[in-house]
Picture: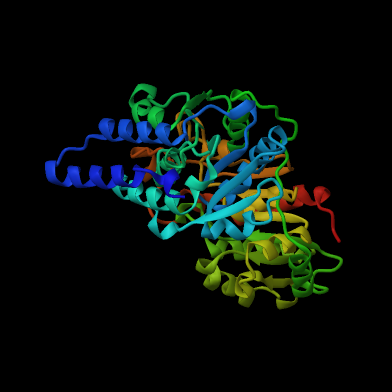
Length: 425
């Protein structure tokens, strides 16, 4: 093992010490030293005999982002059927990823040490690589995140420090490429620019696969749960909602601006239940109070509170497989429901009059329910605060804001339009 570490750790330590003493950041010298040592140790050698033996895939963001990457992961496996594939995810994603049939191992990167500080990232990735990655001798590594954020930066550095010979990723067409390319082109060997017309996250991931020269045969999403998850969900649901349309209500979201007011949800769900539906509520720990509010104020025989059960993503997914329509916010549960091909009613924070979200692409286009029947409800207008201070995320004021303009009657109307697509159990 020592011969595969060589002087890599020493170079990192000396770089950090030198930076403290001189107060100068000499990244160019540092990366050149690392490249020389990687090459000396044999990490930067071309694929032996043209056969890719070891592949690394880094996905350090959220559950929904991971699910949208599954088609690309599957196609990597189809193109490299004999390769040993390592997938690295955050702990919160592990339970969803661990059953992935297209990889050989799923590793957890401790999200408590995710950092935006480049020096801390170097320390963290050196330790992670020394402990796990360097023993694999990766031929090829993929990064599927293109946002300029903490997850993207950490993932790019993971690819570099893994020692992989080829490191593949992409950026958007309208990002200032010369400004972005200096560091990215050191961290990646194969950098592709995604045209703006390729706007959905799944499409972008698959575009990268094809741009790299691989074949794409299947574009479907997937979500996996095992027999125990299925039986647990079936036991928890019991005979709930028999003979009625079962609604999976996703009331949670990582971003407050994506959350719809619970009082308005209550008004909509009262009418929908009166029209013959039942409600299964999904969300995370932050939605415990809101889920209880709905449970207490709706007919109890027609409401099942899965938030309070804290069953976990896989059992939640198995439970959603028993439902007929998803109604809710833009969140991981939405993506899960899309993977299960459920009809979707999505409440979006992106107003109808928003023209420019992310370099001409709106959030709705990026995360639109993939390959399933969907209705997207949007606010009529950006509220003044967002219109006067435009941001790349269109509504970012730290509270429920533009989305509050959607009226309960719109949800009820969308539900009635979606009934023909529901497959009641």
